[in-house]
Image (cartoon, rainbow, N blue to C red; front, side, top):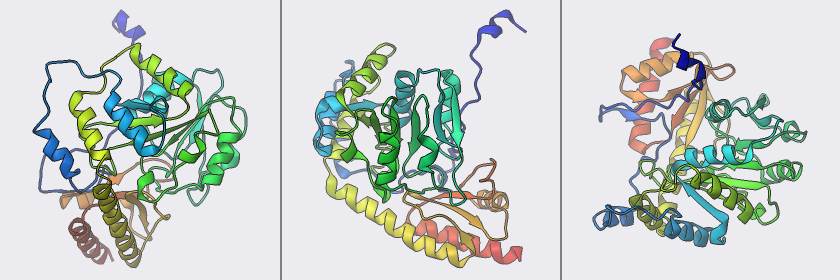
Length: 352
């Protein structure tokens, strides 16, 4: 072994969903929004200038737009390059205790990657048999708590009173609530921010606002939490948010009608598609996200995943304990979901 290799930080990296180059496939594996962003975003793209200059390191225009939209003060909002960037900074900023942080055993698979990368001790808490987070598992001593609501990849949403019980029981540490999918039917914990100075909410423009390609995420919390995150951010990269993202993100958040229309279309498609899946012998927890986490009564998930991929339809399969018989299926357009259903009907019939 080369001597310098002894000092290399070794981690098992996060595995993102496939990004195929073929434009003719049906891509339902990474929870992207199937509809384009707001027309205001497209129109503004032609007007962006001053790219020779550094962007505003505070992303003030976007911060102020988010704060106004959420009914907050600007010192209660932090923006970053996607919610992954925001969450990574939050891990660095708040999880520095000798006690382990806590998160579910089935959840967003970047959490344990960050914990390993930043050398943060952690413990996972198992979901129950219905894939629900049990609030009782997060009431003991710990170094911090993080979980998504709705959870991923299950899509299950926790009632707000149970979220509050976890936050209230952990006043001596920071509780991070990852609300990446909350716009698709979950209940945001935003009303709790002014009551609990240890609560940090993280949301994203990638899913409900169709801007995964711009990488815009943000956190909301008390001013002390936000200042602490800004201090960490400015300690290693001041210019994380580029100028187009700042301006286009602001344009997106100002188009409420388009946002609501798009989200409602996805929810309607999810409701219809869920009924069709049940008719084909699939079962799944009720989803409050833009995907369904489904298992067939008799056909292995990996077999369906492989055959669908060969047919040009990409869904997500996790070869992990407890969930290796499930597929996470992003809700696409009605046309895309009809094509998937036709494939499934044919595949299931041939498998009998």
